[in-house]
Length: 458
Image (cartoon, rainbow, N blue to C red; front, side, top):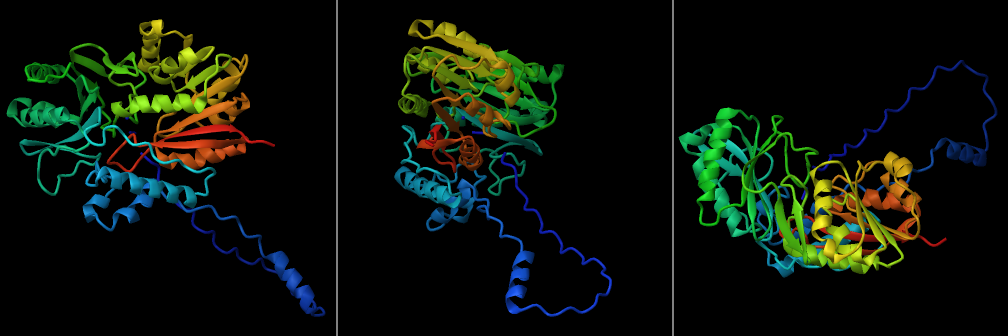
């Protein structure tokens, strides 16, 4: 879990064109009233069809929160803007906000009630803090803006994170504020914890990497391994650009800038009876408790048949492919070259006894690949489209539709990406049959939404 929205600037209205210079002309007979009205009507341009003004899901939620929340709680950039609510109240507000969002954008279909998370708080398997060295103190901050908090606390826990994450952050904040580790603190972009409910790893995102810095990080690693609940591994990721790096929204294609300090090379998680390995930089859902309900709902929506093939685009480490493989004739799992698709290949071997035929293909998912390289369907085909937060590349929806799949399950990890994608599907003759929101991100202003699409009749 996620996952950096572009700001759309409205185009300024064009200025009124200057009237061209005309030669004097002889006065003509004044037209009648009907002729004048007809002439004026021709001059007036036809009114343009107005598109709905930009409204984010967070914007739709704000008025619903205003009655009982403090002003600070309405800051959507805050790490957990809805975490102060009772969970039943949060779900009610999200259901109302989603209905308002759908109506405002005039979207087809009707969202079903949000499926609640089994864990409403303390659910995150990935969390991060931005590092800011101020004087001799390292501050570990929420968000991507390096600004000192108003309360002056060097670290604050989040109700959305497990207690083990808070303990690790608190320990590292104190250690990194010591003079011995000032070098690391001064070059720390982010401190990231990720893994599963059973095990965790620490990732130090730094803007510089040399011998002295690596030695300090290894010393820190020794301290981490002596904790009562130590992380299973620690890594360092080099990002000299100091970008807003977050594993949910930026996936390094290769591991050239990634170094292990201690522990195994891969993290592990067991979901719905399958064991998955994944690289620490690979995408993985941040709410482990919600993954099995999501997989089960995906199977219900797709209604797999033994005569069908499944094309799983943006397959990651094989989450959907391996879970659904026994229900299909065969599965083709595709993702870009890198650690995720290699993990999918490895996971296919690990879970071979479960059955099903899965072929993994390392390709960048573009319109050109779908049109020119991907073999055409050999029979009935269903498609899963689970792109990163920014959505599929231009032309991908068109090329997927050109394959003529009977069912498409488009998975959105952000509500705001839905209007454009649904209109793209409608232009290709597909309509939503079911819209199933899941509360993958309790306490936040976001939802995971599964949309089942089928060809519109006629």
